[in-house]
Every structure is written in structure tokens, then in C-alpha cells.
Image (spheres, rainbow, N blue to C red):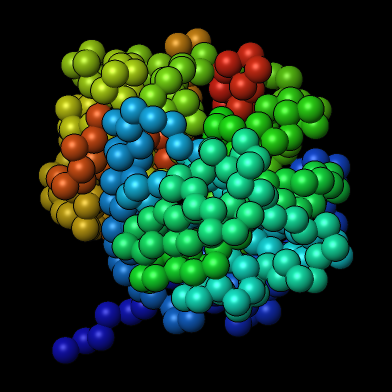
Length: 436
């Protein structure tokens, strides 16, 4: 039996470039209020797997982790109360993009995952029982470290606060793990901007295996988020440009504040869901495949604050998920356009049901929002092995085990675009940009 070749996976093939002597620019000075953004599996990340995976393995692993992400997002939208620090069922996958932050005095460099659907920052601290990181934050080494007292209003903003002593502690669940943390403050430096007395969770104990090694930077809109704590500095405005999975230098950028944001960019209004005010809802009105607007039932795209239905932009989901009627309409038109004049066999790969084993010419897909259209080129809608043996439409319906009413515009579809979150003006902008 012939052994199948190990294919270069879409997000891991940079591992091979290291062996060839190609060194991506992992270090280097960050300027102003702009941070470098790295894929969690790039050579610049210590969280990449120790062994190379086949392309099929890597795609299936990412797709499986997206299922956990969808469960998490679905659990958020139905919740009546707004909880700023992770509570209840939590993300069961490593968030996809990371930035470097300096914490404490003198500064300790840590890697934090960007997450637009979470509010608070949290990170593993020294002496944490059950944390898997080899480089936790060491509070004892920082002269500016402080614990948050029980009497502080901040203590009321965390889930399940407990006050055995005078310090504020709290518990939350994260995937299959339970986590105990202290609410603390210290100076956090992002690029060249120090933010004194930044409030975050310092993890003391974690049981289970689903807590990711890196910390997390919450870019949502809640009271303990980066936006809320740096309102005077950054005016609740940020943008990012996510590098492609296939880029040799995996560095994109996170730009904080209104300065140097793109001037020529189209916007769509941000919608407010009081039940989950952190999520970035937008009004997706139609989807076009090629030149044809596909027939989607209006209720599949409609925004409904009561049920949580609608469309969000999310930095932690990898592949765009559409509710079943919307996905089926897009998929069927995509298949029809690809197969014009040809006899093609459609195959499956994990949760992807529109794959081909011969080269195809794919139509563009356009997301039509209120006031803004975003047309995706093939690189943003297709996943394919480097030897070209398998090509799949990189979108899917919500998993069967998730009663999801959310359409999620995910990070693969956002790659090589500048996505601007302008919260004061309640709008989100998208412009094409080469992110590396």
C-alpha cells in the first residue's frame, strides 16, 4: 500500500520554511499604537504543534475547534445577563491570532490571543496549579502589581466573585475546564503605549485540559474590555489586518485608536444587542455568488435581539458559518457555477461538504451589508492543498449539535482586509489590504 504524502497544511506549512532557513520577522520594534499580529500556529508562536500534520489533519482539526467556538458563541447570544469575564460554557479552542503585550514593571512579555467576542483580559500566573504554560506572569517580580479589593466596583463585574480575604477572587468555566482566578491590576504596555492599573484576571488554578496556554485580550465592548479601560487613550476604536494562513511572514497588525486608520473605507452600522452587548453585530442583507444574489429566506439573515439571531464579525472563528438555509443557498449556487459545462464529483472533508479533487474556477462571493459590500477573492473562500489534490469551499453551516441562529463572518474570510471597529460612531468598516 502506497503511503500518502504529507501535504503542506494551510496553516502549518511555515514549519517547513524554518528547515529551509527562511526566518520570518518575529521580533522587531513595534511603533506607536500598532502591534504585530501572528497566527497562533506560525513559527513566531510557541503554541504551534511539535509535529507536522498532513493538510487533511490540520483542516479537520481547525474545523473541529470551530465547532466548539460555535457552541460558545451560541451560548452567549441567548444569555440574558451580560457577564464581562468568561462565564458558563466557554471557548474550547485556541484563539487563532495572538499579539505580544508587556505586563508589569519591569515588563514581562506575554502572548495574548485577540478575541473580539470576549471582554476581559486574563492570563496564567506563577504557581498556577494545572496551567500548561511555561512562561506564566510573575506578579512578585512587578513593582506595579496590585490585587483588586472586594469592595471595588470592579469585583462586581466578574462571575461568581468570592471574598475569602480582602482580595477579589472569582471562578469560571472554560470548555471542559474550571478556572479559579484573582482580579488584579498592573501596567500593560501595548506597542509603545503603557496603560497603568489595567484590570485583568490572574489564573491561580485550572482543572481539565481546555485552557489554552496563552492569555487572552478581550476586544469586545463590555466594562472590563480593552476598549472600556483605554477609552481616553484609544477612544474605543481599533482595526486589524489578519495575515493569510499561506503567508511566509505571518505578521499582520492590530492598530489601536483613531489615528492612522484608513480614510478610504466603506462602513456598515454596528447593531446593538442589549443581551450580549459585547458582540459586533452587523446587518447582512444578502449574499451574491458571482453575479447572482442567492435566494435566502429573510429570517435567516434578520437581526433579532430577543433570540440573538443575526450576523457578527468574530476574530476567533476560522471558517465562516451561516445558518443552514443561508449556507445551503450559497453552497448550491457555488456548486452550480463551478460545474457549468463540466461533470464534477463533489466530495466531503470533515464538516466541509463542497470539495473537489480536480482544479476548479471559483466564483467570487460577496457579502452585502447595509451600506457596504465585501467581495471575497478565491484566496478567502477556498482551502486547498499545495499539491492541488483537494479544494474545498471554506464555509459551512452551523454544526448539527449547535442550535445556532448566528451567522459568523470568520477570520479566514477577513484575511488581507483591514477591519475597522469604530464604536463611538457605531460602525464597522472593511477595506482590502495586503496584511503582511
